[in-house]
Length: 91
Image (cartoon, rainbow, N blue to C red; front, top):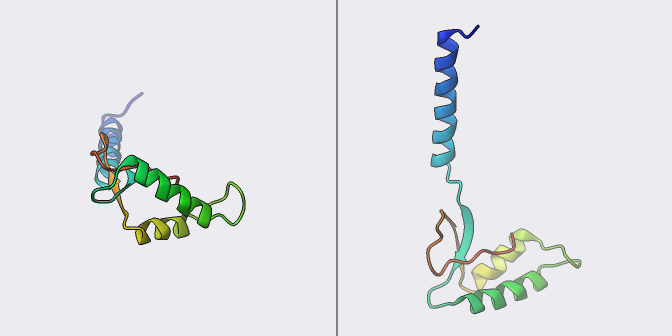
């Protein structure tokens, strides 16, 4: 037996969860640098990954981010479709 009040509160909870997901920004983080192309990002990303890897296959994410930032890249959350000039890092 479904109680009418419970159905309404369930819908309200679902709507609230959807709204929170939308507001919290479900987009992924991407990198951009004025005047840079994908080849530039791939090169800088590879250099930073190598410089911030204490062991093969392990990258210290915060150090990787600092390295790219030092090379002039800006990291920001983007929604789909991702604007031109924004590239996905390894983190």
